[in-house]
Image (cartoon, rainbow, N blue to C red; front, side, top):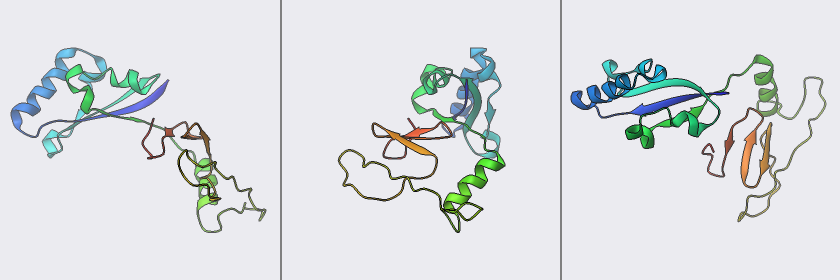
Length: 147
């Protein structure tokens, strides 16, 4: 299972805010009754962290009246080794390992409808049918929006 953060903005007026909270609490759902709210700090948003197999399954936890407005984000964690590897590819001296050996450059195929160029693809990604999937398990289309 994957972890997802669900963010749900709602109207800032007091009555609409109270209605949103009431709908969540009335469901009796463990996830919804444990939502965190920013209302008392002027941020009219609910946040939930849930475990689900898919983004769609995570979205289905949200009450139907709020689903279309919910923002569902797949969460990941990084370890120090992964970050050091990423920084070695993208920071000063990028493309060189610590032992001074040049790293191979991977060239991505062009997206459909785009001209072909020889720019290297970001480290840790692969492309399949117009989607870019990072080694960290997230996928995005050409616009950078998650899939």
